Length: 278
Image (tube, rainbow, N blue to C red; front, top):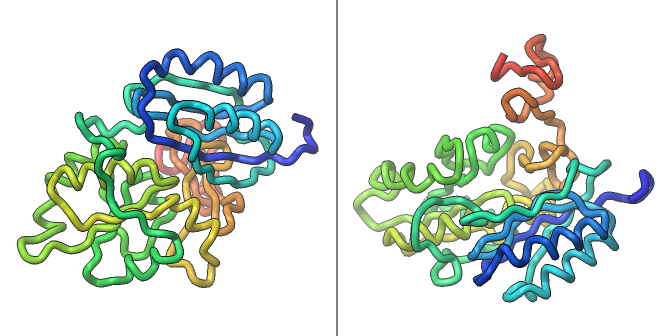
């Protein structure tokens, strides 16, 4: 792509059984290379997940290829724009899980929470009988989250099951069980976390369809219950309402998002340190 071509970013995932994900890797990598697409795609026996970027035409070629894979015809994609290519190279990786929860037998295709559209999300989380849980990592939550959401303080998603089991009684109590609403960046972690809670015997479980990205794309800022910015796993670092690029930088020493305030600190040396790790 040329320097004048607009850069489009596509976030995607699809839970679907792949009998031989390794056989899909090289053809997918070749299509991405030929189309000038960069980013990361994960393949596993449970499906595909990732974020890629390039021209609109290049993305269309790759997405046509992905939609032709078994069970991917209905693949949904969340698009945003970037001022420059947010990835340095293209990677297609084989994984045990496309998002690592680390609990055997959790299958979102078999059991999952109730999807809630972005336009219905505000009413759900404003309900005093609803517990709202942010399933992302602590450094993501620090950049922004929904009003009233609980931060588990986890460093990785695979810590979530232990956190929930340790805090279940405090969260749910012993009386009539509350509704549990969970959210994440694009929706994939909540596919797993709601399936996990269902397996743990929690029935009234909901999650934000399309994740924070779809909410910020479709809900006007004046109606929003989102506070701050949303961390994304590319060189944009964060995005805001309308999925416009945010104000955070990334510390390449500790990989933590650095706010505009912290960027003014003498401890922030681009590429070397930030106030969190100095």
